Amino acid sequence: MATDSQGLMIRLGRLLLANRWGGQALVCLQVSVLSGILLALQYDVAEPYYSTATIELVIPYGAFWRALHYYSSQGFLLLLLCHLAVILWKGEYTYTRPAWVRLTTTVPVALLLMFTGYVLRGDATGEAAGAIAEHIARSIPLLGDLLNQVLFDVSASGARRIYVNHLAGLVALGGFCAWPHLRRYTARWQDHLLLLMLLPALSILVAAPMEPDHVGLLHIGGPWFFLGLQELLRYLPVFWAGVVAPATIILALLALPDGEQRRRRWLFFVCAWLAVYCVLCIISYWRI
Image (cartoon, rainbow, N blue to C red; front, side):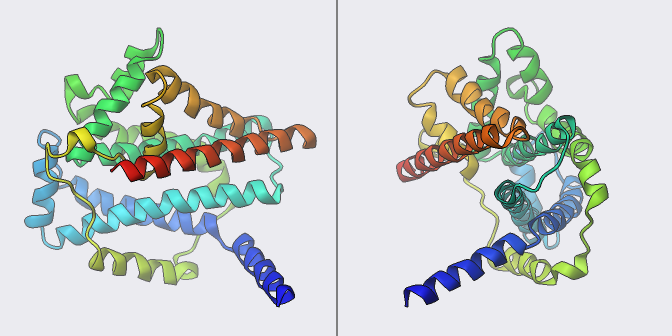
């Protein structure tokens, strides 16, 4: 019985390692971009919450397109992280340091893209996330105000700066970072038909989340990938919780392609960091 279970686990592990995580992530990104263009044509940056609600109520199939954009974006981030995890597990990457740094930068850029998408909803989660992000950016010594003006600037310009970054700035930066990798590996839609059927089906059956405006701001839960940081802000100063802690995992990823022994140390640190962050996410989720 134990042998059968071990064999099943081995086959499952091989299946997960052989799965085309990168191609699936790229397909989700393409669906997200196409559906996002349709939504952007109807979005009014001056009235984020009203505009988002109007898209669902007035635009034909607006709820479907918004849900498709939401779930394809979520799928892109999850599959991108799975793709990165498989690459690290296999240890087959042979990139030079500059190439690895450029490619790995796509992860924080993808997180920022997801985060700004939440803010653009303009609901309770979006407003709280935008306010927290601006507070974190301003906590950075010397460069904080400048960084906030470039990325967020919610208090002064509302959703305008975030809208521009979500549609153009972050997309261009992510494309620049990932372009050498995308030139080597392509993804054809016909190879991912199951995923392409699952996304529309999910979008029809499950509506994209939208909290009432200005309700629950004292007890709001941020995006799922933001929950651990949100919990950490309860215990540490803003700069240490919102800047230093996330920066450590990013720097660890950037430092990975090195000697075998040092690479293992960095990987151990990455795994330990993620384990702690998952615990913080669970605690934060229980508070909601």
